[in-house]
Image (cartoon, rainbow, N blue to C red):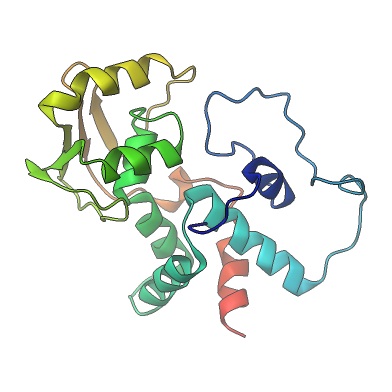
Length: 200
């Protein structure tokens, strides 16, 4: 996603990314693919299904093709279920954790917040959105940036909570308690198809 500058809503609709990474969008937004024939039913090949599964996950977390392939390669070298490890790694990204905690309206905004050096991890400045958090890491907001983040929080319509995060919105801190389990993540992700896609 790093170099794509076109209309992301249409792109996401084509791959079934429902929330479009934005908690302020209305639920009435059409879910079928964009274009004149977007609602037409057609039988997809195995490759098309695998590609869609990959693109759905990649676009949900807003990572580039190169980054996504790297996450897969790293996960495949570890002991355990490759697809689950890959999803857990994506969930551990600093920009994603900020988004999950409700400190950003979209993942794009979360990435920008990190890039602009508003965030501290264990008291140290981190300006890399792909920074991977470990269990026990504490994310806080720089003192001079707290008013800005409070304004962002006030604009979020839908507040969610996640068992692997402890969020203190008064003090603007997030504790990454543990790595989430597969059953706690999006059940619509088809990571097995991603494995098949890269195994060819």
